[in-house]
Image 1 (cartoon, protein in one colour):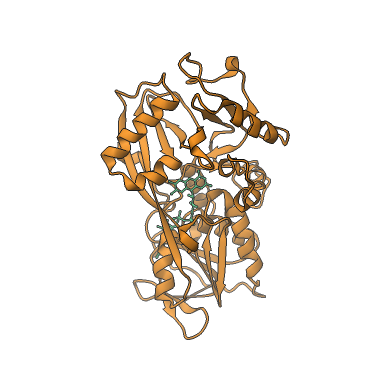
Image 2 (spheres, rainbow, N blue to C red):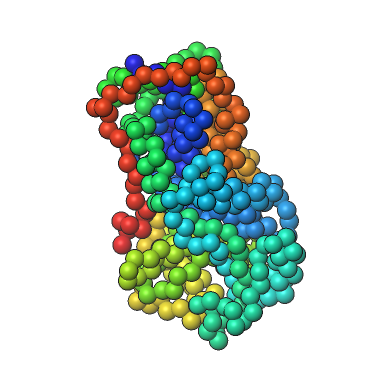
Length: 385
Ligand SMILES: Cc1cc2nc3c(=O)[nH]c(=O)nc-3n(C[C@H](O)[C@H](O)[C@H](O)COP(=O)(O)OP(=O)(O)OC[C@H]3O[C@@H](n4cnc5c(N)ncnc54)[C@H](O)[C@@H]3O)c2cc1C
C-alpha cells in the first residue's frame, strides 16, 4: 500500500496545476496519468488565455465573461515567476492577438470594441498599422489588437512535468468503491493500493468512467469539436474572425505554430463547433471558404489540410449548453474537477484548495522506483502531417 495526502487522477492542465499548487503548500501528492501528460484536451487546446471578449461580441455581459475577465492577470503573474504556480519557463506563442472582420461589420464592431477599449482592452488599428495578412488591398474588414496571451501548450505541460517529475506515475488506477460518500482507495494494475485523504478526479473525459466505477452520481456531458489544421507557407497569425453572422462566437479562431520552414494554422471557434455535422472532406472545404472570405489575399491551394475530432469534457448542463464557470464537486473524499477552459484553471484550483482540509502531518509513504514515470505527450499537429 502507498499512502499520500492527495491522489490526483489525470495529467492534463488541471491535474498538473493542482499537483504543483498542493506540493508548494506542503501537501504530499501523487498524480496518475494513463497515457502521456496533456494528451486529452490540454495539448489539443489553442492555448488562448482570453479575458472573455470572445464570449460577448454581441455586447451582452454573461456569467462566462465576468468570471473569465480576471484570469489573464493571474496567468501573467505565473508566467513572470511571481504567481501561485511557477510558469516562468513556459513559452508563449504571442502576447497579443487580433480580432478581424470580413467587410460587413465595421461600424458595429467598432462601437462595441470602442467601449471595451476604455477599460484597456482591444485597440483598434489604423490601416497602416495592420499586420500581415491584412495589409493587402483585398482585405476590407477592421482589425483590433487584443492584449491577451497565447501559451504554447506543450511547453506548459513540459514545465509543470519537469518540476514535479518524481510525483508523476503512468497508471490508470481503478477506484475502490465504498458504501456512502467517497471511495476506499485506488487499485493499480499490479495490485498496489493507493490510500489518500482526498482523491481528485481531473481526468477530463475519463471522469465519466471514474465516476461510474466509484458509484458517484454526478452527470457529465461531452461537446464535440471538429478542428482544422492547415500547413504551408502561411503568415504567423493568431486571432478571432468575426462577422455580423457570428453573434457571440467567432466564425473561426486561428492560432499558429511554426517550424523552421512552414507554419501550421490551427482553426477552431464556430467552424469547429458546427463542423461536428460535417465529414472531413466537407469540413476542409468549409474551412477553405471561410479563409477566402476573411483573408482573400492568402493562397491555400498548395497547403495541406487535416482535421481533428475532439470532445470537450464538462459537468452536465441543461440542453448541453456550455457551462459558465469551472466546476469542482465534492463527494466525500472525492473532488471532481472540470475547468471548462484552460484559462479558468487557476480559479478551479483555488476552489479545490478551499475544499481540502490539510492533514496535521504529511501522510506519506515512499513510491517504489519500479513505477513508470508519466511523461509529456505531443501536440496533435506533431503527428498529423
Ligand atoms: C480543441 C480545443 C481547443 C481549446 N482551446 C482553448 C483555448 O484556447 N483556451 C482555453 O482557455 N481553453 C481551451 N480549451 C479547453 C481546455 O483545453 C480544457 O478545458 C482543458 O485543457 C481541460 O484540462 P483537463 O486537465 O481538465 O483535461 P484533459 O486535458 O482532458 O486531461 C485529462 C487527462 O486525464 C487522463 N486520463 C483520463 N482518464 C484517466 C484515467 N482513468 N486514469 C489516468 N489518467 C486518465 C487523460 O489521458 C488526460 O491526459 C480547448 C479545448 C479543446 C478541445
